[in-house]
Image (cartoon, rainbow, N blue to C red; front, side, top):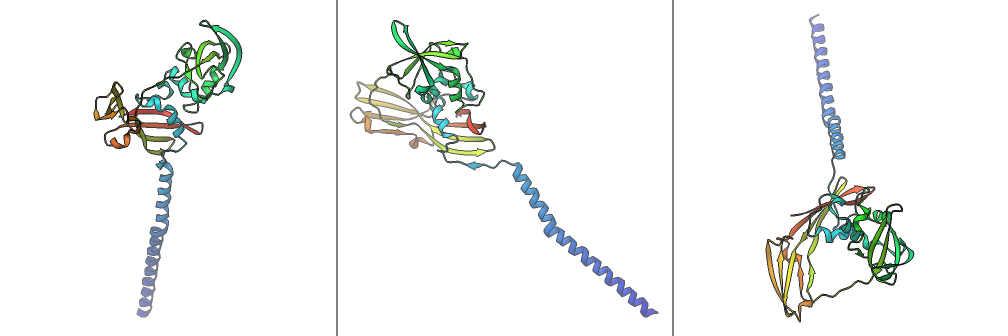
Length: 288
């Protein structure tokens, strides 16, 4: 009988050890595989919820065409409110290079300021459609703000009278301008080759592209076109002199000034481009 009790005790002990082994094995399986899998899935979910910073080439076409089109206007001023940061005249000038002959309809001759002018119609909507290449899809301006203003130079338009477009009137009913053309041109003195700005960095994060550009600013003066003095600044307000360069008139055309020589002190222009209708458009720029 004592022997039976011993056997039963041994059996109970074996059963306890087996259950303990099973429990331990189950923990190991959970810890090594199931728990690990849960952590990996959680990390993957976190990655999906986070925006990944993607470095871009500084010439990436998703933003470079817009940056180039607006570069004249972002060089010296902060433009922190999209198209609202630009005047109607500036918006006209921005799209001037995109206008072509087929955007105009000839309507006849008219006496303007004592001259017989060939007059054409240009649709306000045409200007808006071309601006949407660079700005958000809600871009607009007051149509009458560019009437009898400075006009614009249209390099890809010429009807024989020249590529300088003047706007004489706007018809609110038809949404069209009456415009005419004249010659443009001018001369300037000799100067060095100047590279005043350079795109340094670009990356995409979420639905935005961030671009950094370095820029220098300068003034020039001359004495009878024989001696030229260029003062180089690190800000458009010209309160931080970086360098002074002297050039002789007979060799100035072969000289150069480059932002590459002043990157450590040059201004930084920071751009933001936002996604709108599956393209990136100008959102803001700031000089620091």
